[in-house]
Amino acid sequence: MFLKKIYKPFSVFSIRLRLSLIFVAIFGATTILFNMFIFKMMIDNLQQDFDDALFNYAVDVSQGVEIGLKGDLNFPPLRLDHGKILPFPLGTALIQVRHASGAVLARVGNFGEFNPPYKKDFERIGGGDEATYHTIEHISNIPSAEADSYRLISFPLDNASKPQLLLQIAVPMTLLETQISNRLTLMEIGIPFILIIATLGGVFLSARALAPVKNMIEITQNIKASELSTRVPVPLANDEIKKLALTLNEMLSRIQKAFQSQERFIADASHQLLTPLTILRQELELFRKNPSQDSDSFIKSSIQEVDILSKVIQEMLLLARADAGLGALNLQELSLEDLVFEALSRCEKLATSKSIKLKLNINNETSEDRKMILGDNDLLGNLVFNIVENAIKYSPNNEVVSIRVTHREKTCELVVDDNGPGIPQEQLPFIFERFSRGTNMGSQIKGFGLGLAIAQKIAILHGAKLSAENHTGNGARLTFEIKNI
Image 1 (spheres, one colour):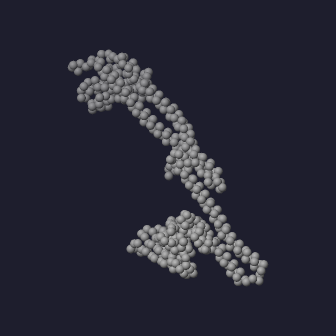
Image 2 (cartoon, rainbow, N blue to C red):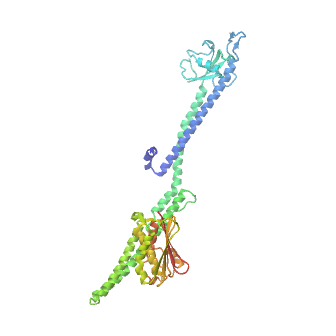
């Protein structure tokens, strides 16, 4: 939720700008964190080098302090070693020897009112520390201070378990401060400069990366209904852009196929509707010219043509409902057997007229009760009726149409076999297209070529499978398979 609130103001920007901002944000945060880590390690290393040099200097100075055999102290003037290169100016070092009581026994340098701490240093060295270090930042008490801060080392002069004498040396951290300041300035200037370069590079790279997408947009915007064969170029790289191009091309292929199918459907539907209308018009014209002719014959013929028109329109409306998708379904639990029984009762008159016997077998491959399916009663009833009616139409007189219902664990299957001429092999891929009819006996069979197209649409709408093939011997086989609930 929090990330959505942050992202919302950027949602109005173009994807190119958003990609650039995201890239710069991630790169900038990573760069800053990495440089902070490196800067911290660098400061620690410089501090360690500085302390090591200060420790070595303290050892050299401690060698100039003399302690008598009887414990008496002899402090000759402390000598400064000017022959070594150290990270601090030796001439400004403040040196003193301090007793555990707090008394200052010897000093070199102008301490002014500066009084270095010592009590905790005696305790820590007595506890085993080799030396102690402090950074003194409040140096207003030091006259003519050489730096903003001083580094103080406390080093034991005697080897007792609890030393009584400490050598304390405070040196200015001028060189260390300069090194840190220079590196900090470099980061303050370098990081923004790097981020600016990264921003420009991000904008450039995102533009190059999205150039194929821009090209696809321009191509698809210029595609017209008459140019649906146009396709977007597919990049060579196997990435998301290639997948997008392939997806767009597949979508364009589906749209082109749908347009072509729609055009064929309109042309075929117009032809199917025009034929009965033309016949009806001719009969009306004849009746108008010769009103004395047999009116019963005219009315019977007219009703027949109107029935044909109603049948075509009814099937086209059913096909349109199937095309409407899942929103047009009235889903309920159904029995495939009940749908078959209902279809057989509707087909009985047609089968009787051709002396065709309808043979029904119901098989259960499991010991459980019959399975139920989920679907639209009207649409699935029409599907079963169409494939049974199709088998009866294409079977010769005095033949048998076999209907088999099989209940399996996950699916129910309906198989309808006829003993007709079968489906020519070259027509099998197109048998479920609208207004598609087999050439074998096609002129002898009444129909419009919409039944199997409607059945296939209904099957697809229910996530089922309807297939056609030629079975062994003569005749075609239609198989419908749907999942159980």
